[in-house]
Image 1 (spheres, one colour):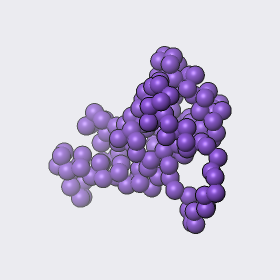
Image 2 (tube, helix red, strand yellow):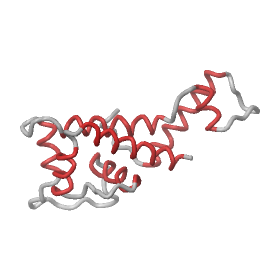
Image 3 (tube, one colour):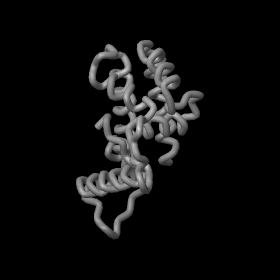
Image 4 (cartoon, one colour):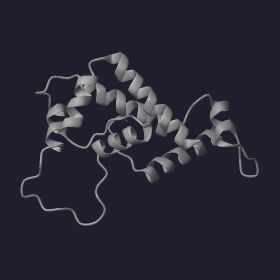
Length: 149
């Protein structure tokens, strides 16, 4: 779940399906209505997109704390290498995990981005401090929750 790079539309569809399943479990059928907020309170849960965002950042912090020769670290490094004679994509850019992480950072109002190697190195320096990393994760999750309401 932490490696999912979902677009906003995919995330919204996933949350919608989740709410449909919760209503089915509670026995709420068509003429009956319940707000999303009341549904989540009644079920004592939160939208799946919030759980995915939190899992994504927890996993990213775990990966950044790993040694540099681990394949996950090497994949992150290769993403931020300048392309060498690679033809450009036609059409909409593909949604990648670093793009989603960068969007999460921007939506949280945090002063960092994840656009280049310098940004990645700054996050690598932040990740070993678990207190600061959990505060960053909490801030990103709170921003995602605020965006949904």
